[in-house]
Image (cartoon, rainbow, N blue to C red):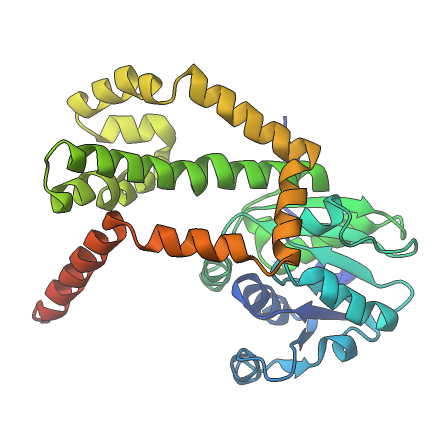
Length: 331
């Protein structure tokens, strides 16, 4: 059974928090910390397009190598690709007892960043995109998070992680104890098998099956993609049982009898194989090599994916729906 924490002592954040990055997670962490009374400085490269937004929000902004000086915590809220180079840039300026915080364990777990002894290495990973983390905080709620410690130099690293999580609002929804390994491996698995890879391929395969059978692409798009949000919202609100309660008996019967035919034993074996790639580091080595090469394969795959009939049909239908909403008269 998971251990869930609802509280953290924000007063432990007595020094400066240097937030590196001001993207999805960076802006949410920085603003929530600031609103919780924590001293925050944002580290951005010269010429960053995010600088104006951070300054307009009332935050102090400087170069990453400068803002980490004398920081109690340095939060690496940058894309996985750039974290190692930024770490190498800022490492000489870290205070001897500075804690390093991550919102995803990839680089630490796979050894791309290996802080020396003397530094706490902690994780606070909200289970939601940054704009949700910020919006829920402003509404008085919070986004759940997982918290972990990879290196406990101070003897109080976990308390510091809980304090940080509480300051960004995660304590309001619950902070689950985990490890860098568990967070990294389950996060990659979820992305690849369900949330991104699995869902997108299921949508594409369903769409193409209907179109190849002679059905109109527009109708296939509505059935296999557009209505997905309605189902996901029901699942998010009430779990699988809540969704099944809300749909028709016909839909529920089809779900329970045909779903296992789509996600069969062969699919489950592929899931296990993907998990083994993650656990062994095979996926990490493949992705690291891709990043080091400048991501040419990702660019090629991205272009191929954007040039599918599903995407062309969807673009047209979404434009139509936006136009119709804009034409609805307001009271």
